[in-house]
Length: 281
Image 1 (tube, rainbow, N blue to C red):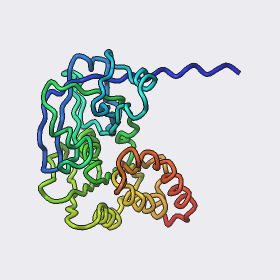
Image 2: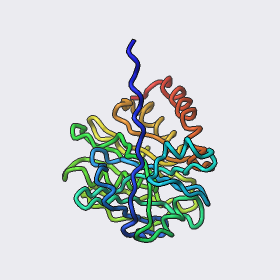
Image 3: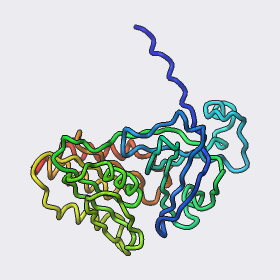
Image 4: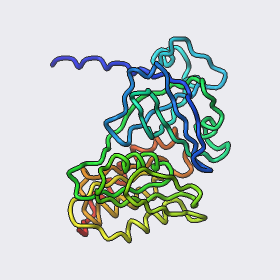
């Protein structure tokens, strides 16, 4: 048997902060750019994401930056910490990458960083990844998510042609968190208030009268409500797996490192529970 060729090391991209903008009380936009993005592209999926690399406190890495070298020469506790964020927009002509961050004061790593950065600051990241884009052959589209999924939902709606049949539900903390989306699809904004994350979202999707025909669905956000909506769509409505983009972007009570470590087991357990359940479709 021929040996599989060695996997080509992934290269980190380098960019600089161009500008920042406060979109809502809990949403901050950071636009990255620079000549270093000449080899970058994020224009095939509407859920493209990048993994931002945050240096360990007090650690300086050799230049030119090489993540593989860092992992070979530095102890694990000095490796950069990664945080995953959706590409809100990519302007290839001007080489500008837009990323929106959910912020809750000093909570977390990337949110506070997005409030501190200034034009000219250097940013490194891996990617892009991504797997979803609206299928023009689908009869209609369903999009549902919380704040963490808002950038991908907005980008997806803006990529859809006028007149498309789509139902979009976005749950946010309150009316002040709503955003303008350049689409003729009417977004149903759900205001969480003091309710648990995703509760209003699950109720709204469950109450929707599903149009006839094949649906393509995009459902992302906090893992617990994503689990409930996955059961609704896969088990109760019998939507084929290939027509679903559905995953927990985050899990209440876990940071990204903890969630990513436990996510494969979580997904496997949910799939085993739900795939064996009888469909009501």
